[in-house]
Image (cartoon, rainbow, N blue to C red; front, side, top):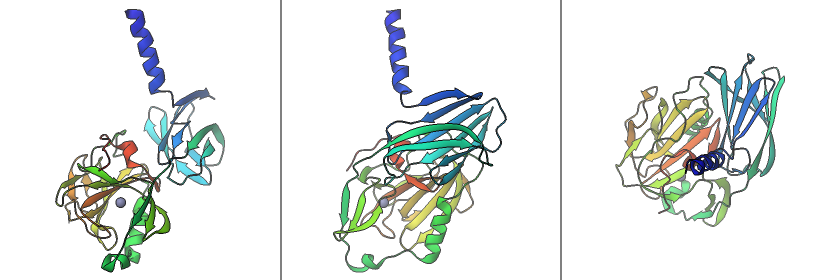
Length: 288
Ligand SMILES: [Zn+2]
């Protein structure tokens, strides 16, 4: 019985960590998770434990430079967001210092996900609804917020609200049968007007205001390149600049801005890249 239990534990461990690559080079222990079969929309966690003193380590991924943050005890972490339209295939990850000196080289394999097409029929006054210049600038700035402090703790994150999924992340968006060339950068959770919306993790409120396209909007900086967005809210209770805790109320569900009915659009950005919030969500909700 004991032998069986040991075998069982080994199998479970192999299963749980099977998509993490560990290696030990130059006195560094590197972990990349996931590394093979990274789905479009996923986030790759790159961690290095170093006995040597690192000098401002960073990740070079394609033409992007991603900051790694000191978590204490020689552990550095950086996150790579893989969006819905990232080209599938083998991608190189370099860990360097800020002068370009190479510490480590790893690879991840991005695999495609067949995201569905969604056609939205737009008529009347909502058809002409665009974002204002100020709205676009504020939203863009918030997405790329990079603060050194980590307010968040390791995922999964809390539920922003309860409900079923009316539009998944990654949908190819068509308006009146014509491709917009864009994809859905969050999850739409169908919920009744006025239902509570909570912060998915602790953070600092970047945006808490009404916009023309996005409607009632809250954006929260969770630190170290992680930012969450909550759109179309009927009521906003969070205040810009406020520090909030996981699960704290930030507002209520609505249908403000470009929305055909009450729902919460929940977006999650990793160093400015929109990823699939479902991957971070403690509750894997079903489609409506
Ligand atoms: Zn949406």
